[in-house]
Length: 364
Image (spheres, rainbow, N blue to C red):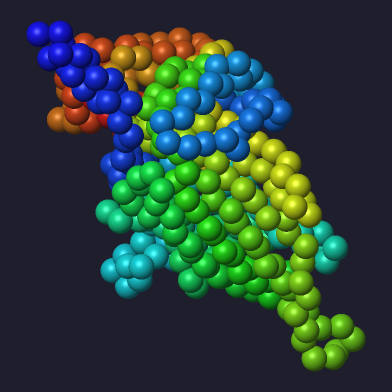
């Protein structure tokens, strides 16, 4: 009897510590949102990993919060949709969503007087991979869609411990007419699932797998001086290292840490983790993007509604048009309970001083 009990307890222990596998259903869909806390605790040990590892980052301090939105392609400008929402004629570049790339390594171009800003990434989710099919960049204030001529494979799926892959990608950006030149980026991504186990953050405790990616950039600019033949000049862009901890059904990493490699020395530049709403959130207004967010979406309890303008009223409708909830307030941040609703899709109509906005809301 004691022997059977021992084996039963051992079996429970093994199940509790079994590694997870992350697949395409664990990544975001167009329309999803996630709350992210940003920390400046750069001095912690983020490099260590291995099998059945315990990462304890409970001490991370939140310095600011933001809402990451994975936009439907229908929300993109016509300029971007013509390239990345054109599956009938160009299915390889039909993205599932796009999002702002806050840690994108922008090539240095200030010396030629050209600004490159507001990078967005267009992502395609397949059963066996996650691809960044291209980026959108604002060059001298104009939106420019840039295909990855060789597509960047961010993750090979499913993700399991000790998996590894190498992805080489390439894009060229014609700077004309702002500048008579061509910017080229060749990128080599070397990735590995180098750990699995348990992570503790201020958001909670999760079973995770950990990935690490090394990104080496070869950036060059094709220009001519004094009417001579065009020449390619290499640009100094530091390499990046990206650590991510993935859990099941979370849509974004539980923790993501980004560093730069300066002459063989790693310097952490970004620490971000998934979190709950902790207070005032600064709603950044991006050119051409809405300044109103619904978080979390999907939700099973309460949704936060955050706006850069005062919210006058919120109305909730079922998919068949039935009016369910009418609420009103004069704040830029408030919440609405959806705990009593059955699972499915609903519509939120949010009236602000800027006008009426309709958002899809998924209750799970």
